[in-house]
Image 1: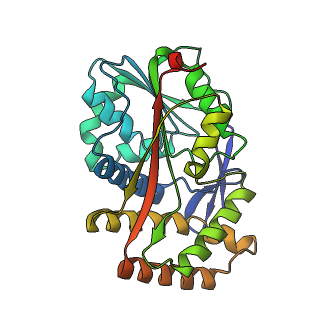
Image 2: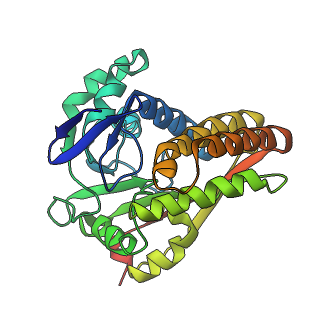
Length: 290
């Protein structure tokens, strides 16, 4: 097992995966890059667009917890006048994505992109009213206590006439109320809380918005309405569960053989009875808030 630094972060190699030593449960490597790319295409397939806020010609866009940055590249293609600031805890996933053949078309866009390494759980390193459009998709690294401050920070750095948009997620489910899925979810949530995360911000998004002083409507989209969506979603969720496997065993939450047994049963249940997951989207203008 080796350890390396990325900025002020400590990362380690564990069972062939690159993982942060503390404070973040997910890996940061080629496999995670592939999962996030799949997830991006699944979201686009489900929502039929990259955003819902009525933006027209934004000049400064911020993508918080950008991951691979693929969302931002596609926004830059759509808005040739725009500049994108992509923020994440480190640059590894974004660099790995650019090594892929499918990313070659995005290389010319790098001149309109600035990458910032920062922890989105801390105050954002930008001046007030900086951006026309501020976006955060699946910031599931946040705890309940961190969500309201996070939303207020998104609003602070956005111009009053600009837009803030947040996408988050709820519990996945199979058609037969799989006990294996329930066991995996309970174990993953228990592990996530030990990391200081909640992992499913959509479950309390209304409460988080209210605590942040935000009044806005939340749109819901259930992903898994077609066989194609179900196949993509199942790949995403299985990969996400596997992110917890070693941590669950190390913490005594679920042994590895039990994890594999439950995961195999969950796959069987999902394929036999169907599988879906709700996603939640909210957008608002700072000038409309108190």
